[in-house]
Length: 267
Length: 160
Image (cartoon, rainbow over all chains, first blue to last red):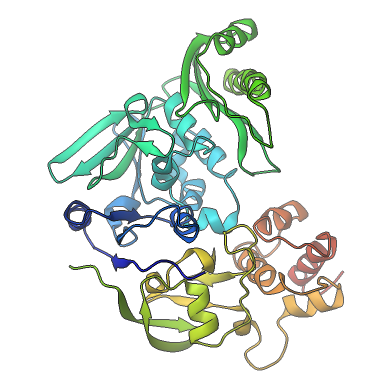
């Protein structure tokens, strides 16, 4: 398809990218393009300038932090995450990345893109919320680090303001915690109808539900089945109804996937 | 650096270097088909789902309807035409033919490139690995059974 006219720049430094994003009102970062290109085809977005992040080596790094956690550059592709030996600091990340779309999409699609598009059906937002990860955002006035609760603002909306760029995802060391993820997708590795991630430590679970509100819904509970079910039933959910599931059915599925995620984590 | 509406790009396609002026909005698949006349790469769904437009860019399988041509500047691209440069069929193409792994043929170029990407990285895949490797390629004719068998056979040097 012929896209609407657009300008293009491929800066080689993060500073250069931020400068471009903050000096052009209609500029948007282009990461893997696995969402944005299609949104542009549908004329659902019409950026004036695409700032291609693919030459930003700084954003492609995967490293372990001093305390055994993980730092993932926003431009690390899902395939690179899956293959990375460092990613076994929190194996759930690679396990979930391998469930996203297909080989070709994982080869281009990035961690930052999956998180920043904040489609409520995306896989990674609930995972980063459950793991207590933080996102680093760089703008013309410097750098800040925010939690998942602060980061996810609404459907397709995050704390990354116009002119800013998410540069890095920092995941704390497991430190005895174990993680799980469960979803009901449309076909294997398809779009999620409902999903949940969980981290369990000393019998305490931190659960993040996806697809049932504008942003991941974070709950705390003990890891027992009854407690998990009760926590989900008592949560403030606003699930959509569509051809795949009614809102009531999604509420039911939220309970099911939350429990499965906790049970995987509790192993 | 200032943003541009278009630029001159250099792309190596199937070993041959091509230089063209392209608009920033041009998708790689249209650069291949319309600028270079390499019409083996197909446009199917144009939404990133069907995989008919799959090519290998710098050794990595991608869907060329989701990449701008300007993003391919300086890269090396393999398309289905590159599988048989001298007219002699590639072992995967031989296997697709002998196993009847296509009917209408529309998905075949993308299917072949995904299969090549798999065998380039995993020369002895299991059936499960083959199925996962072609998950991003939709075929509405065959039911996939013969495609999976063809790829398995090509991996074994054409044997059943």
